[in-house]
Amino acid sequence: MTAKTLCASLLAVMTLTACGEDDIILPGAREPIRPEAVTVNQALPINLPAPQPRSSWTHRNGDTDHATPQAVLSAAPSLAFAVSIGAGDSTRARITAEPVVAGGVVYTMDAQSRITATTTGGAPVWSVVLTPPSNIPSDVSGGGLAFGGGRLYVTTGFGQLFALDPATGGQFWTQDLDAPGTSAPTVFGDLVYAVSRDGTGWAIDTVDGRIRYQVGGVPSVSSFAGGAGPAVTSDLAVFPFSSGQVIGVFPQGGIERWSQIVSGDRLGEAVSNISDIAGDPVIDGDRVYVGNFSGRTAALDAATGDRIWTIEEGAVGPVWPAGGSVFMVNDLNQLIRLDAATGATIWRVALPDFVDNGGFFRSKRTVFAHYGPVMASNRLIVASSDGQLRSFDPRSGALLSSIAIPGGAASAPALANGVLYLVSKDGQLLAFR
Image (cartoon, rainbow, N blue to C red; front, side):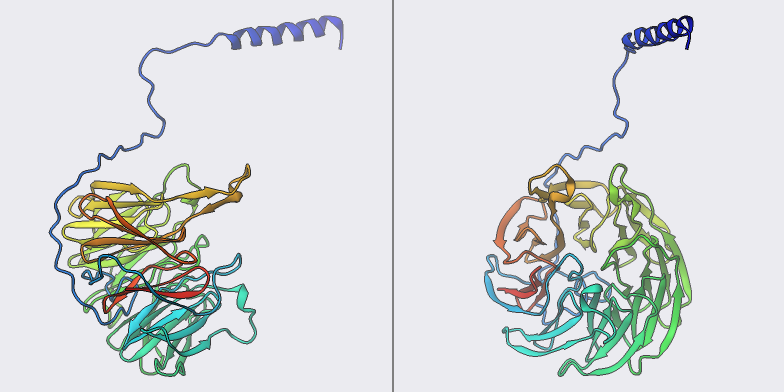
């Protein structure tokens, strides 16, 4: 480079540098790139149906439609017993099944496909492992439980649906789903409904395990262990898929009534890449509520699938509709009360999000999971992996009480005969009464 060229280059750099020093301030108000909605919490009256005594809890959220009247629970429950059900959460497998209760027995599933029956008094009845012999138990997790027609139904991450004898754990039949069946099944009448992770909905005969029909949905590679299962009533079965698609069909024949996509994400969050339906469909009268994991929840017309409203809140589990409101835990670990008619937020309460274990990277954080809410005796109850069972006022969201959960929660609560059951992260069935 010649001296002349070098001088010219230095002059150009100095000129650009000098230009960069002049900061031009434009007049006017500064607006955020992503405006955030500000919620002013309101304590509004709510007319709740009276709590009902329940002798069973046969499905996730209690019933086949996932919309359950509130149960009875004492104002100050305490730990009645804690018994082992098998393997707890680990870095390679985790518990995804919530307990179901029927006939005085609690049925649970551990992180390695072990099914255990325990009396409501805490005594063991039987235990069976549903892991194929050719697989290593720690490699696969996922699945769920449902009870109906005198049988226990189990889906597993190994892609199988089982019908078990609830008295002994013996198998009546097994049906291959061709892909992991990581969400809980639903039993209604003579059919058991399930969803596999390849975007297929299944209706299986409860008597012999034969396929009655299949529903083809859009598959997705971005999903997680657990997931959402079907919701069913006498005239509607709603199948959720990991792509965000939701299909409503006639339950007996499987003829499609409508199809809807719950899409959208929360900008700036890593989970926005996951389209999975995490908030199981909830059929409440003429409404279907469903939410994805990454930032959208919708209310749909049950007859047509038409969208009534959509909110920019993800759902980590099924919502709980009651008294003209909808309660949910969103993707930001907040407990929220919505107006059922419009989707407007009435109040939101922050739940514990994470704890910093010391270190620069986010991988050093322990992120908490929250399960629920369920409603019992006019209180909203959320079980959390941080080791607390919290109760909230449905009117205002105020915290009413907090009870220690040994080991931290790994499932939403199940309620029967005035007792609350849940599974802990270390593989125990806990009972509070």
